[in-house]
Length: 199
Image (tube, rainbow, N blue to C red; front, side):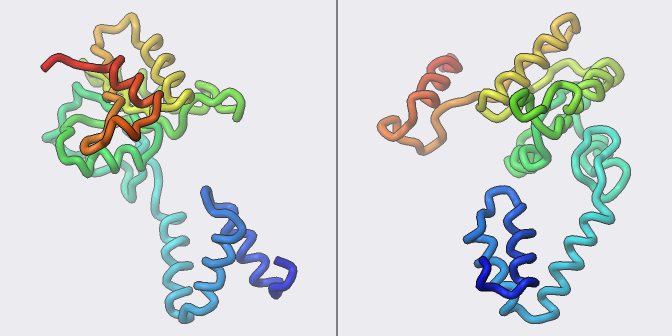
């Protein structure tokens, strides 16, 4: 990186701070931006500033929104008795794109990861409990990622709601539609057997 002029080095350093972006990818992005027109660069910079200035957390579910309450929480046709708990807003978007879930969401903004210093106090768990008690929730769907952190978070939530009259379910884990058993990893196969259901 030392062969680049200082402003380019700075740009590469800033771009490499993004998750999943290493120095090589950051260098390619920086090169692309250098070749882009001034108008394109301005539009990118303005869109970044626009997001930082206008996007906030929904005060009900903690999804990302432009207003005080997000569109999903404002929708009167949603079933407030069914609460789908997700780790991050992108998981909410993925579920919404399926078009089949008509309940509401709660975004934790992370998962338990003690080695990374993320404990229960860093997640939106108290707000989740407040909603369950206040809104008459009858079912909680745990839509955690199938990771050690996701499993630990799901287990903690299950323990937190144990004394309440709330049904707790978890999204199925296993073989994807169109998948081939020969190429499926052992953990996924194991989970698909564990979470099998009747026909």
